[in-house]
Image (tube, rainbow, N blue to C red; front, side, top):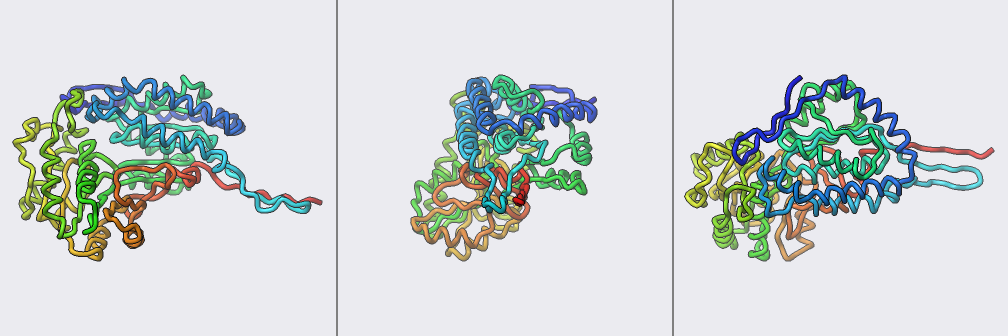
Length: 460
């Protein structure tokens, strides 16, 4: 039996160790879950909603401790207060629409026929959650899955293993019946074996493209549903008519918050030539004022990346770009905590970049952003679409019609105007190309965790 080991990026020490579970151990949990799920699915939706709402309250009550745990596990500064605000927003919305979203669709109700389409739970749902937003990403599937009447298994990233245990505690405190929520400690091989055996009826994975491919390969031939949110290289486009100050402040924050480790963080920016110089100057002023340091210090605005290898990948991309002619505009001397040997990484802004450089093409997932000058909407659209990814795009303009038309032409799951790096729970969260497939949140968020069942009832 192997161990999962969480190394804190703060100082490289071992923070948490957990023994992994075997296939046999998980199969016992699956048996109990399937039995519990049958009763759970027969309970009124309102009853299920009430229990899940109590679990969210339990998470909120533990937030002060959770904020510190997140800082220790993956480096986000405590000054930002954790994720409970977003967790509540998403959970509250999905709970509020549950009755409507799960209601049968009546086609005919006459003396001759009753025809309808009902939604039934798929059964068992596996959520494989990432470390970058350990609560926000997991809640997107956990809440609708449980509300719809499923049993849920959560396999959290090793880097944020305590988050899975917090969810388990919260559901227990809320009175969720035993067996319906299970927190798993699994290695990759055991996960693949369970998926290949069709232990789960729906698998939701948030992570890398490579991880998504491994999930699909494990699930091949099982016909289990798979939802994948994978990589991103999300662009911002600043048109000539944009509010420059608002665009700079928001896009820079979208690029640098959480040390750039955001699924829909801004990784490349295209600015109209008339605003380019001013935009770059203001962006550099903002980034130069950041404070890189211990995330447990309330004065820290930028913590370490979650792992040394993540920081090294960003360093490599920046070095390659500079060697190819890019200009690095942020003085590393402003960030002495970055020694080049650990997870602490100074933020960087690059100009003179192009799409031949990995920093403008591959996912960076760190505190670096490249900025390019453009002369037209057409040029910006072409550059935005020149990517293997398609999660979100942020358009900055005073013209909503222009934003909608640009949005129609670009290949992403979400189009923002004058904002970025946000999930609206009333809108579906999806992507295209190598960003993956499937949908979470909104009314559509219940589709993955249910299956349609038709009833054609004839009176005689």
